[in-house]
Amino acid sequence: MPQAPFPITRHRRLRATLQLRNLVREHELSVNDLIWPIFVRDGQGIEEPVASMPGVVRRSVDKIVEAAREAANLGIPAICLFPYTDASLKTQACEEAWNPDNLSNRAIRAIRDAGIEIAIMTDIALDPYNINGHDGIVRDGVIVNDETVEALVKMALAQAEAGADILGPSDMMDGRIGAIRRALEAEGHQNVTIMSYAAKFASAFYGPFRDAVGASGALKGDKFTYQIDPANRLAALACVERDLSEGADMVMVKPGLPYLDMVREVKDRFGAPTFAYQVSGEYAMIEAAAANGWIAGDKVMLESLMSFRRAGCDGVLTYFAPRVARILNG
Ligand code: PBG
Image (cartoon, rainbow, N blue to C red; front, top):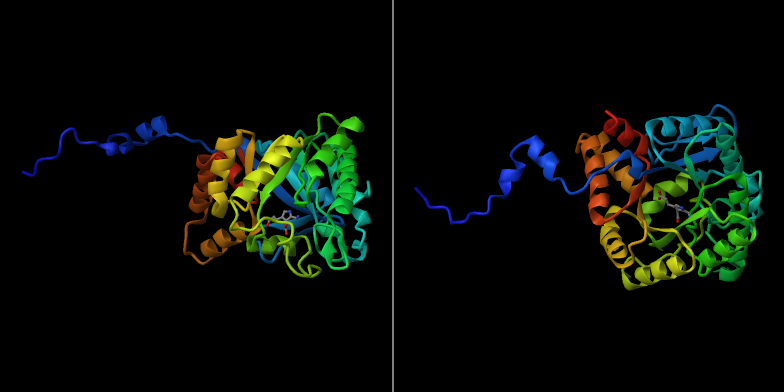
């Protein structure tokens, strides 16, 4: 008989039964870790499929209220609103972004008026309102930083007035976190939180999202002059440090799975509440492979979300949120 080395390290002892595995599991995925991004459009009674994101729809405000209620009943702590803005409302100056009655602000009020207990997160960036499709104001082909920040501050205040709990600046302009935080303090919104899209990379994984919000048609060029080069790790850490020092309560890494190294590093280095966005392209890839019968969709979905937790995420923005919640709730 071959002799086993002694003492043999038998890692498999703790994997032998479900109970032992449950006992020694290091990380947990909970419904409390989920933020559900949802798309708002105008109209009444509408749920319109997004072609590149099977299972995801754009909802009119009444349906958004239903979705928020469903999410709250599932125990999901937060939803994140993204407006699909009609092309006729897109301008060079992006004024619709700070209209108190724009789609996003109407949706916030409707959810608040319905008394639904769920945190409402918003997106702060000009792309849904911009005739150029960019996150910032474009002058002579250049995305101008400081003028954009002024617009973003107006947008943030309108969202706070409407009743948003978490503001999500996703625009990547310099100085916007400090400017928004100062304005919130000055206008009596001391308790409105900011989750900065701090480590946001210029990614092709956002493709389906730009269809969902109707920005792909308008977008001229790419976003490399403001979003971070995917090759740059130190630049991303510098942005996180800067945004925390300017008053962000929480930070985000985006996209998710391909950037989990950044999640681990941000969490270890700064300790702040750290989130990642499992973006539209990541969702679409899992859905497409599952639809072809190439992978087991639900299992891959849950495994991908556990990976975010293992990497150090406190929570994840994911289009899968209600599906995950239903599974976790049993
Ligand atoms: C807009 C914004 C984008 C996403 C969230 N906010 C797209 C972009 O930066 O082009 C992407 C989300 C996703 O792909 O799911 N600033």
